[in-house]
Length: 79
Image (tube, rainbow, N blue to C red):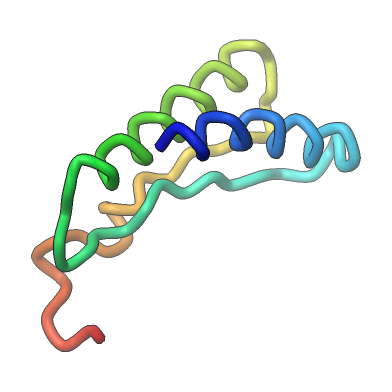
C-alpha cells in the first residue's frame, strides 16, 4: 500500500496534465479469493486520492468501486 501511496496521485496528475479534457475512470481492486488488509488498504487509498482530486475540481475523474464490478460472492469458477 505504501508503494501505491507514493505513485498513485502523481500518476493521476501526470495523466491529467497530458490529457486535461479526457475522462478518467479510476477503479478500485476487484474481489480476490484471499482478501486481506492489503486489498482493503489499496481500495481506501484509491478512494482517498480520487475523492480529493474530485473535490479539488477534477470534474472528468470518476471513481468506480471494483467490488461492485466483481465482488466476493461472484468468484465461483474464476481462476
